[in-house]
Length: 110
Image (cartoon, rainbow, N blue to C red; front, side, top):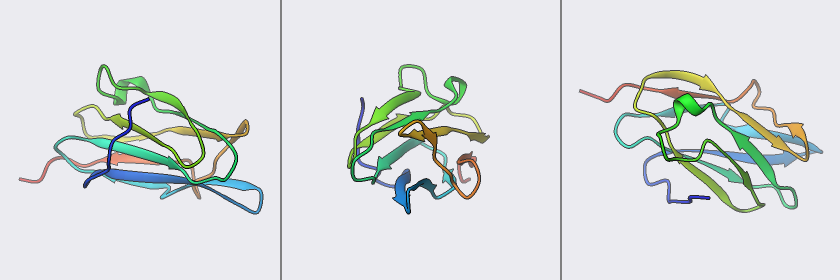
């Protein structure tokens, strides 16, 4: 599974609180240019499964994967603007994001 430093790109984290799993921030914004997106599993013991819609991921980049505790999932998003939801499951349960997690892709700055 590809991993890379965020270096100015967007990052979301998966965490556990009182037996429930959350993705924060619930809404992630990714700016123009190389559109890297990283999800970090900050739980102590559980693998997390992540799945992004294939159409929103650059060809050749992973759109789904399993993230061990303390590890990252990194993907390159397609060069298009808009927003989409993605799924994160931990221990078979959907993680919450105060709403379903959403990625918003902003057009490049002029």
